[in-house]
Length: 137
Image 1 (cartoon, rainbow, N blue to C red):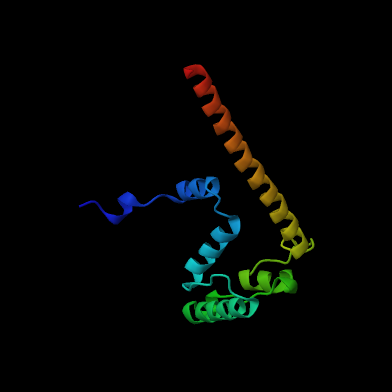
Image 2: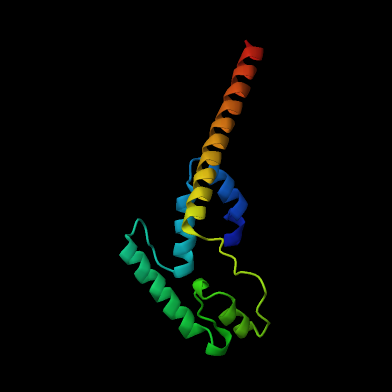
């Protein structure tokens, strides 16, 4: 009897099949979060999501030894991170790359590209079918 893994699709195949069949980026993110936190979140409201996040943080604090864990807020900048890692604080500003406005802008571009590629694939498939039918008849 073949092992369970024989019939499993790898992540790249799942992504391509999902992408071409209309599986949204939002769904993929939700599934990754659900797998990470071990709980189904579905279309939860902010309150539920924050509770799931808090439980996840509590579990990490329980599972990781205190001397190996840094509970860090990005707004704190370099100092606590560098102290924890025992490295000098850099002479450059702390990067702020995950600002909400930047993320919203990035996701909007991703959504447009996704739609463009989906329509492009449909167009190419349609042209191919039309060409084959034209050559046959």
